[in-house]
Length: 552
Image 1 (cartoon, rainbow, N blue to C red):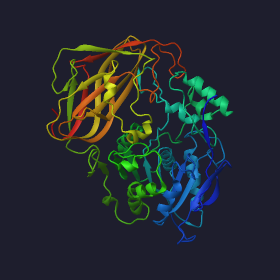
Image 2 (cartoon, rainbow, N blue to C red):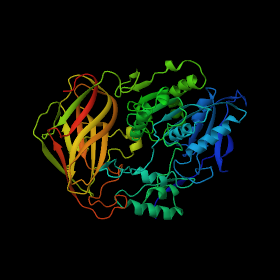
Image 3 (cartoon, rainbow, N blue to C red):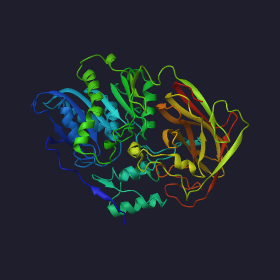
Image 4 (cartoon, rainbow, N blue to C red):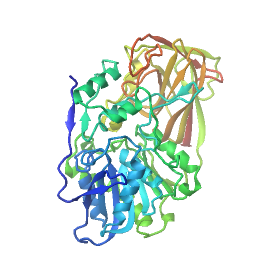
């Protein structure tokens, strides 16, 4: 029998009035209404939070957030999305959020305590529900503040016809539907990672739970990509002012940056798109946090102490765009933390003006340097499905809670390591990091992971960027351009840059079998010999955005 914990809805907050909101198809969605006590039922501005994690539960501490927002004069509506906890309907990921968000906005503006102005706030899936509601074009939605999220959140990887490369699939893609979207309740469970028969383990869980997950069956084994946005693009409808928060260590940040790229191409959205970049991971842990706050379970007092840092930037944003106090010009287009420092900087655009691209080339001796001219050669390593390169953090969503030292991973025989000389003075990096590489394998499918690390003088290594790519027909050489993400980071004097190259990052990513068999179902396996070109025009090169200082 599969071991799991089933978490039902928590008691509704004493601060809230329960309500049921009727959608256009008759389904009733549960909501908690928080009204400032000193205003009674007087009309005012409303902040809507639509989430699948229980509007009354301890995980997202919505009652404490509502308490803080009410203290600033806002009415708050927290709603369980369709099929979750107290809400009716099917628990189907993503596809109902545009219509349900629109219908909820319709309901809010009809209430006596609403003045017709609504904003939205939230992280992750309840950041996604903001993009979805905005895509409806509803005129009452005056501003949104999505954090650590993306409009493509959770979508399974699909390779375009005729293309050899794609992203590597996250394991969470298939596990999320059978934990957070498996009926009304949450099911806390995970596979036995020592086994690789993931699909079989999901079926065991479904049998033990006594019902199937419509969201899982939608995606596996034959993905059905249902349209999320009626107009196709999430940014095709009327634009909405957005305070868009991204974490340097958020594992979902590639989805956020993809949205930034799309918004940049859309003048209507770009005109009032404000970017905030923090040194946080997906769960909001900070790089330089007080050690007392780096705990898995925070007390209510700790949470209340952290709310100003989390919510005050949003309240300042809403003061302008919802309440009309001040000018949009007073809010920087980009506000970002230089990771490793307490500095918060502002810029007119991202990346900042004045950066220069510096190329560091890998050498056969394990070096990483500029102008490392050398004849091309190949380095090899073995991908063994029975001995996979481990993910550095047990929980990728809480990377900064664990703050793992990645240096030991480089001691493995199946990881290639390249290290630069220490820098003589501080170097500030700001902007996109990319890598170019040429690879091949004696197996049919090859996964390539490239991690960029800050190597300290004491030998510990902190990951500051990473990228990955999957290659089909891998017996033929493939020239890859890898997106390692964006950085805003100070490399301290005496520190070096290090690069790890491998073929797995498990269990964060679904590993390859070595035979081309479906990696989620597993099946027959084989070890593969992987090849990476070093030197010459096709050799591994890391392209870095240097804002200040000199790399050795």
